[in-house]
Image (cartoon, rainbow, N blue to C red; front, side, top):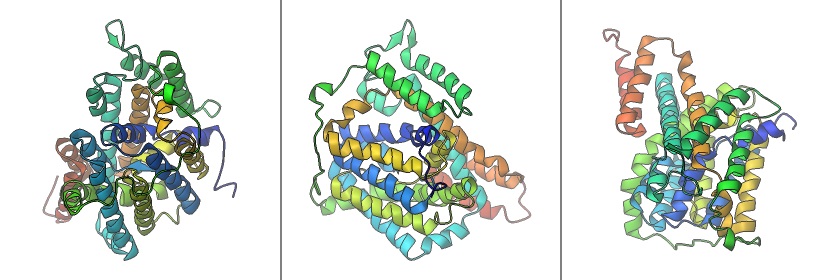
Length: 399
C-alpha cells in the first residue's frame, strides 16, 4: 500500500505536471463550446481517482486533443462534442473488450511508438512556446497574451515571455530538488502572481455550495450530430488515441514502472477510457483519454505512485462539487505562460524516449513521422510511419 500510494510534496508537484495540457482545452471548451464546468471537472476528477486506484501507478488524464482543438477553433455545439465522446466510448469498448487492440499492439513496430512519442512531445513543446509568446489559439481568440492578468507588457517585452523565462530557469534549477519540487514551486508561484496581477474574473459570482452536475445537460444528440461527430471528430481522433493514449502510453508506463504497471495493458487502457467517456457524456464534460505526454509530465515533475492521481482527482472533485460553474474563477489565476513552462518540460521528457533507438532505419521512421506530424497531424504521421517501418524491413532498402 505504501508503494502504491504516497502523499507528499513530490507526488503533489507531479500531479500538477500536466495542467498545461488539460486546463487550456478545458477552459476553451467551456467558454467557446458551452460545456458544463461542473460536469467537466467531475468527470476529470473521477477519471483521475479511478485510474489511480485501478492501475496502482501514476496514470494520466487528458482531453482528446484532435476533438478539443477542432471544437475550439470552429465553435461547434456542445451536443456535437457529446456525440463524439459517446462514439469514441463505444469504439474503445469494442477495441478493448474484444482484444483487437492487442493485435494492433503487436503489429505496430517500436520505431512507430517512438515516433508517436517524439511527435507528441514536440507538439507539446511548441504549444508551450506559444503560450509564453501569447500566440496560442485560445489567447488569439481572447485577444490577449495573458487574458486574466491586468499587465500585458513590461516595457516592450510581453509579460508572458518574462514569466516563461524566469519560470523556466527556476524549473531547471529545481527539477532534481526534493525539498522544493519544481512543478509545485512554478504552479504556486503562478497562482501568487495571479493574485497580485489578476483581473479576478468571475470572483464576484464565486459562491461555495453544493453543486451536482445535470444528467445529459444538452439532451440526446441528434442523428445529424452523430454523423458530423463521426466524420469530422471521431475518425481523425482514433489514430492518435490508439497510437498515443493506448500503445505509447502502455509502453512508457512499463518503462517508468516495470514492476507496478502490470495492469496497464492496451485492453485495460481502452476500457477505462471508454468508461470515462460514457461518464463525461452523461454529465456534459469533454472527451477524455490517457496519454504518453501526460504520463511523461507527471513523472518529470515528481509523481511516482497513484497517490498523485488521488490528490489531483480530489482537487477537481472539489472544484466540481463545491464551486460548480464558478470554479473557473480560481483557474483564471494561473497565467498561460506558467502552463507553457509545464508543457515544454513535459514535452521534452516525452521526446527523449527516442534515445534507445540505435538503428538508422528506426531513427529514420521516427524522424519522418515527426516531420509529417508537424506538416499535417499525428494521425497521418502514424499511418505513414507504419507503412515506412514495414517497407524498411526489406533489406534492399537503405537509409
